[in-house]
Image 1 (tube, one colour):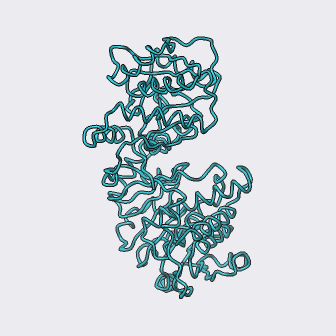
Image 2 (cartoon, one colour):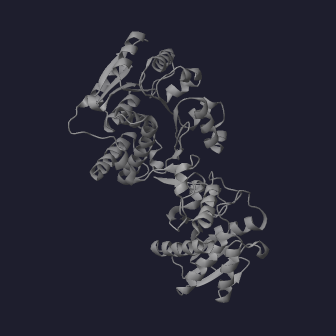
Length: 500
């Protein structure tokens, strides 16, 4: 796993390293400049004629140091100083004096000259105000320049905490991020301005972050082998859980199929689908491994019997929003004694009866997309997008659930737990049925006896990794939901091979 701090926490880490560890700021600056030049070379960026734009703070100091190092490698370098001399930090002034003494040109305006690379070191992670006036004009001019575009730590104009664009922002194709990738370059639209983000170790101590719940985190591929539920040699299908999928409605057998198959692929031992009778034949043909039980009306006794049988329940995928569906949801949340995943129509029904979440004594995972979550919370989608972390914290504080808020950057939240932000996945996954697959994957992992929050996090990440593998095989346009399941299976196999 790796942390995704905002600018405030990154500045605290910087101060902690300088004042408590004792590493001088100028030493960190030298490390930052050196690692940036290394990445420029490694990524094949042509620096033969470089323009480095420097502000007055330490981000500008990094830029001056980068200019000096490139000059030392025989590159033609021009520095554009965009700050105020009176506002220069001590370290920035030191680095600028060295650049000036070396005879490296320092200009204060953009010219018509074209450069092989344009490096943005104007503002750092502390920027929290809208960019206006001469700075706005400057960044717009830089964006129009030809040549490769590189940002130092974070593109100027991207809010480090939520990815908002503060009026205007530098459009980089590469961002060299110091110590940690910042949350603002993970979330959209900041991600679009940051391009490829490469975090580099410059010696900042971030060990204290493990105690700070407010700092988000994400997973990496090497984490999969450490987090998968154990598969014991001496086991049987009952070892890996009995899953009840209350899914599908007339004409929506596909949702039941996708979620059930995903539960099997992610490790469940036995899956039973409870669905309208009209779906029986097609589901038995599509997924003969599943047990299919059906209904034509709401049968409380039968539902309770099935709930007593199950080790984990998933309800809502393609369920519909009719009266029978509503009764099934109410009965499940009130009568179940095992973890329950509520997806899609289950969440739409829940938006009319929030009180059900207080009537359960078992773990509940909700998996809404942005529109479903906005309806559940009684706010607009735009409000939720702008304040997703605040609103998620409020919601999970009020209701005893794990919430998987699905978006281009899915977030997993639970009361008193750190936010997980998913950084895997891609645009090929924007297809009908992808959410059904996610619900099934989480269900299958919980059947393997994972703790609910950890199962939700791993399920989200596995689903996204499966999407990345599917895109590798089929491209951005042709991936279907079932291809995500295949991708997940491949990723789990690769992770299993690394265990031990």
